[in-house]
Each structure stands twice: as structure tokens, then as C-alpha cells.
Length: 272
Image (tube, rainbow, N blue to C red):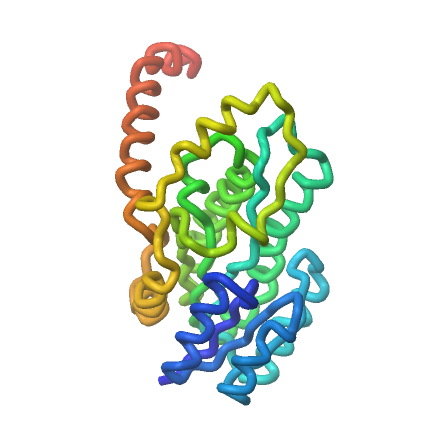
């Protein structure tokens, strides 16, 4: 049975790739983008099964209106994929107020507004699946992407809480956590803070860790996303790519060891 899936940030990268895969197999897709012309080829090919909507996800009122249009057009919204977002490259000290706020407005608040807008529809339907595009950098952190890390860590906390709140309504929540893929996430869609020379060595160390083998092929994610959408019992978290699992295990082993080393101090602070 065909589903109706709403995807934000569908003009390129994962969003457009997944939108076309869903259309190819017969689903209805609501594609929210900043520039409607970016979808011309898909509109020509798939016609009425694709509803393109112009949307700036940082505009809460516009986000609610877009969701209402999607519901009115197709009658339901079975899946929301909150994919819109970008990366801000720069050390914490290098990031301006405007850059930090823009990062959070898109990656966190934009996701929040769409989530809030779709929840009443899914509660009334008694079913739905909200897929939040997080990142492996929402679980572990690296230098030079601190504000991006913060935005994705916020998405993780929000979505884990949301999952516990809406499970009883028949709504599932999944955090998709990709490692780096060969999209333009680190290219034209990224923002660069003005550099401070004191961080040049840190920056060089960060970029030296990026290897071709660690960058995934975007098209290879499609099968996993379709499987996730079709699952009757989807996971709360889904890593995409081979880098995340061993990295997270290594980092959390270190965290557990440090917590254990300071357990006596932590217990004493309880006071009783």
C-alpha cells in the first residue's frame, strides 16, 4: 500500500535521493524545498504523486501551513523525514552569534516546528513515523564542528524524549545517524566561520582524519531508508555507514571508564 511521506530539504543530497526512490516505488511524496525549480525534473516525471512546497523550515507558521497543505492534498501524512539542515565549520571561538543562531534555527528549531505541526495529524490517524536526520556527530563530537555537534546533540535529546511521549499514539520516532557521505554537505551547502590562526593546528588535525574510505556512497543509503520506512517496529536509532558503530563504542568505553574512575566522588555528592 502506498504511503505519503513528507521530506524537508528535498532539493539535493539525501532528501532528493530518497524522494525519488519513494516515488519510483509508488509512494506519494511531499517535498519541501527553498527553491521549487530544484524539483522540476521530478515533477515532470512523477506528476501528481509529488507535491512540491516552497518552505523555509525556520519559519514556524510557514511550517505549520506546509504540513496542513500536505494533509489536505493527500489526506494523510504517514511519514515525516526531517532532513533539512547544514554544517557550520569553525572552532567554537570562531563562530559568530549569527552563524550559531542560524545553525540552531535550521538544524534544531526547523525540525521542531515540523515535528510539532505533524503530531496532531498522526495522533488523529493513530499512526505515523517521524524520522529525524541526526548524525553520528549527534552522538560523538569532533573539533571544528562544535556548533553543528550541539545542534545534533539537541536533536537527539528532543527525539528520544518525543519517542517516549508519542509511542502510545501509534507514532514511532527514529534518529537516523549517518557518518560522512559524498553529498555536498561539506561542500556548497556548508558554512565556514572566519578562521582564527590559533586554531590552524586543530583544523589541520581534523581534516587529516577525513579519508576517502570513511566517506560513504549516498545511493547506498536508499535501501536502508526504505526498509526503515516499511518496518513495523522501527528502531529509535539507525546508524548509516560503517564508521559510526566502532567509533561510538570506542568513545563510550572511554566515558564509562572515566565515570567509574570518579564514582566515589559522584556518590559522595549525593549526600546520603
